Amino acid sequence: MAALAAPFVLAACEATPPPAPAVRNFIVFFDFDRSTLTPRAMDIVKEAANTAKTGQSARVTCAGHTGTAGSANYNMALSVRRANAVKNALVDIGVPASSISVDAKGETSPRVQTLDDVREPQNRRVDIVIEWTKDKTKRRPVRTAFLLAVACFYGQGMMFISGPRS
Image 1 (cartoon, rainbow, N blue to C red):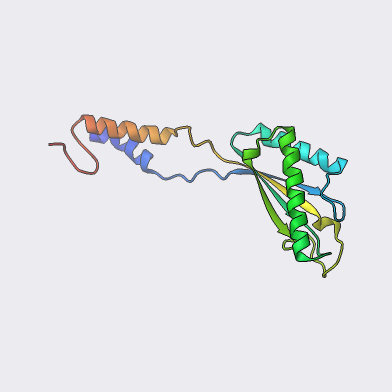
Image 2: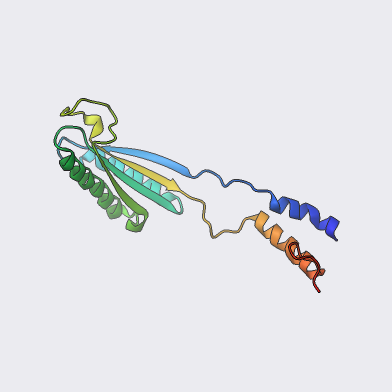
């Protein structure tokens, strides 16, 4: 019996790494010193929302950014307002608020490096990152085969760890 179950046990014990999560990125740009969404920005947010709603277990991150014009504290607050504006628009379109996180980068992660007090349009943005993770509630066939092999051995009076039952 052990010889018959050995292939199942070996297959069940093989560690296969989980597949990498699928990721999709969108960038929404803003006017200088503004956190309101332009019509073009709304189009991108709608596309991101539709994308987020197509997959299961989607996690959405909205990371707000600014340029270097103005103080670092002001720019941090502006990046929060921008990220929240995008989050609110996503929620209005039907993405669950619980699946969206907001991150503020201020002027710390520019898309285009500039000197201080430079108004660079590419740095006035929110990066939307949508990531899908595998649904952990589904059982993998390998796990099922392993449990079946354990049950078969246990039913025959054998255990993997402690040896024969007494």
